[in-house]
Length: 158
Image (cartoon, rainbow, N blue to C red; front, side, top):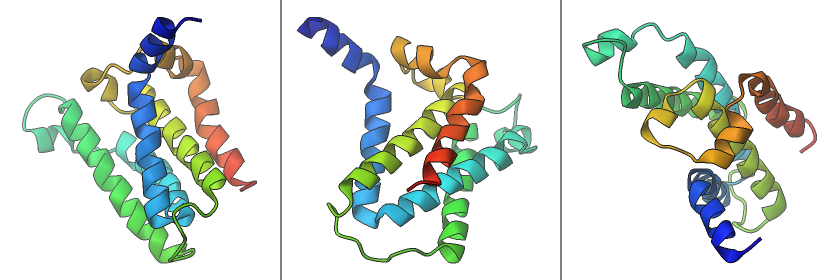
C-alpha cells in the first residue's frame, strides 16, 4: 500500500474521522458518562425522529428538506441528553485523559451509530458524501441491525 492510496482512503473517510474526533473531544471535555448519555440519547432520537409526523408542516412544502430532518433529529438528541442526564447523572468531573481508552471506545461506538443513521435513517448522505469505503461498511441494509446492536452490546461490558 503506497502513500497515495492511504491519503485517498483518509480523504474518503474524513466524515467518519471528523465524527470520531468530535465525540472524543466531547468525552474528554465532559467525561465518559456524558458520552454514554449521548449514545443512549442517539437511540432515543432515532426512535422518535423516524416516526416524527410533522416534517411537512415544519418545512412548509413537500416532504421536508434533509437539513430540517437532521435539525429535528439533533433537537431530539439534545432533549434525550437532558433527559438522560437527569436520570443517569454519572460523575461530574473527570480528567480529560483519565480513562482515555474507554473514552476512545465510547467515541467509536457513537461514531458507529452516527454512520449507521447516516445511511439508513437520516438524509446525511444527501448533504455529505462519506466516501466509498464507508458506504461499503454501513450502507447495506442487512447490516443496519448489527450496527445498532454492537454499541449496545459493548456498553454492557464497559
